[in-house]
Structures are given as C-alpha cells and as structure tokens.
Image (cartoon, rainbow, N blue to C red; front, side, top):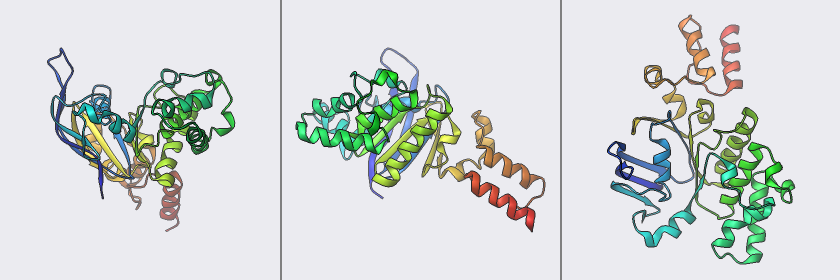
Length: 278
C-alpha cells in the first residue's frame, strides 16, 4: 500500500529546551487508512502530529508528504494542501459569523474560484452532516457541531489526509461520538486518509491501525484488536483496554470459551451468547 506520510529517524527538541520530545521515529502512514495514535499527555503524540503538515520540522531526520520534504519551505503550501489539521478547540478554528462563511475561509485563501468554493462548501457540509446549519452562527452550535464545522473547513481544502489532534478533548460523550463517526465515514466512504490523535481508548476501536506512544517513542503498532491484547504493556502505560476486551478476558480467565480480540459491542454480546448456549 502506498505511503502518504513518511517519517525517517525523526528526532525533535523544542527550541530553547534540552529535553528531546521525539526519539528516532520511523513511521509510514498508508494512503486511505484510518490510523489512531494513543498516548498520555507528554507521550509526544501531538508533537508527532504537528510534523505531519510541517507545523514543526525535525531537529534531526526527515518527514516527507507525498514525497515533499517538510523542511523545504517552498513546498509548504503543497504540503498543507495535502494534509489538513484539526485541533482540540473548535472555537480557535472558527473565524466567521456564519457557518458557510467559515468553511469557505480556507479555499478563499487558497485562491479557489468563487463558483468552485460554493460547490466545495456545500459538499463539505453535507459530508459532515452540517449542511442544514450552513446559515447558523457557529457560536450557537454544540461543541460536537462546531468541531464538525472545523472538519468541514479542512475538507473544503480537498486534502488527501486529515490529521486530528485530540479533536474530542473538550467535548462531551455525545460530541465525541459525532466527531469519531464523522471522520470514520470520511475514511471509509471518501477514501480520505485519517490520523486521529487521542487519549480515549474507545475512539481507536474502528481504526485500521493503532499506535501507542510513550515518552517520545512508538511502543506498540498494529491492528487495534492485537494491540489491546498486550495487557502488560497497557498496564505499564496506565491505559485500560476497551470494556469489551476486559470483559472477554475476564470470562476467558474464568473458564468460558470466548475470543478475547472482539472490540465491537454487538459482536461481543453474540460471542458470549454463543458460549453460554454451548
């Protein structure tokens, strides 16, 4: 599968500091996939995310986006048109008083013709389920709705990849669910590469790939169902496996013949029912 973002021995230290944040990261993000990156505060996951569209560039090593070196300032516009970023606080990303004007802001700054902007804005709002709110004032929306508008603003730039840096950190459970369902659909239905930075285990369940970061290094990388089986690692990192995994592992330890790598709630219920009926 083709790589869209490539990290090669990436180290990073913030200017004026002695403590290195990233320690020799080697990583490829594959086109069209949904990758979740999990870790506690200070693990380096947000610093890693900011390297994906040249907000930060390596102190040592190399990051390329579709072959474009992020250290080459002449390629910056192309890099950021390829990889869009969504951050924690949607209020910091909303710049207009009407939803559709806010979504139009980035394409306008890219010099997109007005008639194409209209098409992009409508399409982006429909993709995130916010078209019916296009004439609303953003400040009257819920947190989840605001974040979906922020995502629409990135979609309107027509990036090949969207990186979301803890986009649900300030949202309630309903808003978190809205955002995760939205980005999952963008990947599955539109083929957009999605990288989701989070510290919520349940947001990683539907990803193709789960990476766990700790102290600036990648300590686990694989399918979520496989990573969540690494109970000792999760314990060391102070992370809890999803409720389905924990339940199935407990039942297995008690002697029930059930698989322990099921993450979907309905599938988990079916597996338990099947084991009971045997």
